[in-house]
Length: 284
Image 1 (cartoon, one colour):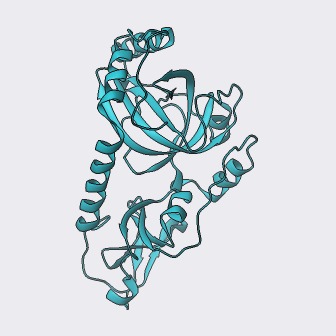
Image 2 (cartoon, helix red, strand yellow):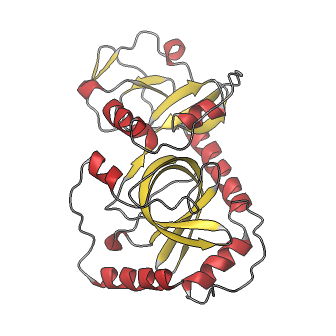
Image 3 (cartoon, one colour):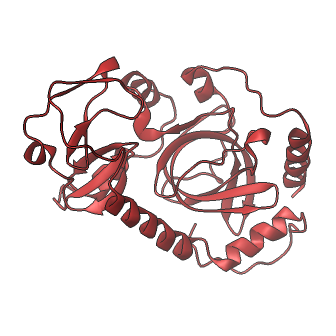
């Protein structure tokens, strides 16, 4: 685990320094950097000392200059490792149940899980926030390995992307688009609850159905023709409660004690290459 020790020393040095400073890069430059470019869904997370770990499902992988296929594979799980402090360029804000496009480095493994180092200077984007141009650039990228498939069965779910809510035919369809499911069934129908409201969102943003009212994405100016009943910004409290409860249940189910113990041992740098560790209950 020599590389892990080097990583921890680097984190400590960066924290002592003045803070995180990144060189600006375009979307295309980000795609060219790192060992891995991947689309993942966060299922659990834990902070151990200077390091924060995420357990994620790998939904898609794109080959890079130095790919490590044994570490990141479609349909398996991967551990994302980052500094626990934003001052050390740590990626500390990822949320369980959300889908992200990331680039990262590394070829370490623990309990059969690949470990990929990520930082805030790299590519860290919520997948559903990609522009059409960026999505087109990504889809044309050389080395795309996975295909996101889902059944056509209609079992509607309400999914969120930021402040926006949208109804999808089923969970698989929402996941493929990078949206996070917040409840079963269709989303609230704004057209029935606020029939006469007309909202024009500036900057080309689409209006969103939130708590029974038409609203623009957070931070986007809007020009209302008619007023509607005031609503709390974002997803309704009921949907938020369901989402938080679901995330907690998934975290307890996925991030089991054996994996946590292995990560703590790796954190101390005592995980020997020849040490025999029992197979984790979490299937990589």
